[in-house]
Length: 141
Image (cartoon, rainbow, N blue to C red):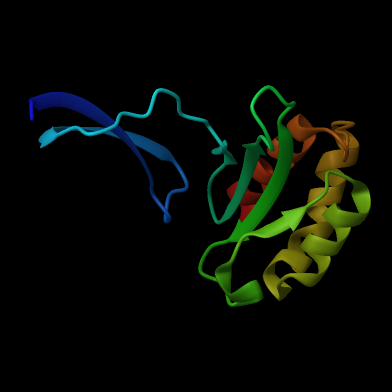
């Protein structure tokens, strides 16, 4: 049996930061079979970080398929939803519901946040509008 040295790239995602890191590990082992292909199932990116974390997850159901996007809000240091990410759709109803009902602190800022959205004519159905709104909210919290 032959000894083979190979480089194994391991993707490690940090649960606290929701950011992807790469680490390289060298191993020596006896190779009986080698995978010839790998499939990327998805990835997550942080769109806005602060007291409110806004992230986007892209996933593929099968190789070659179009990615499906899902958006999540997470309130740090909060008991709302036990601190777990909360899935949202990019629309006005989801926006109003999350910021009015998630916590008293966010509810107090809701009027300022909607005024910010209206003054800048930001869309509730656009990712960029949500990013700007949540960046603003993080700056006033």
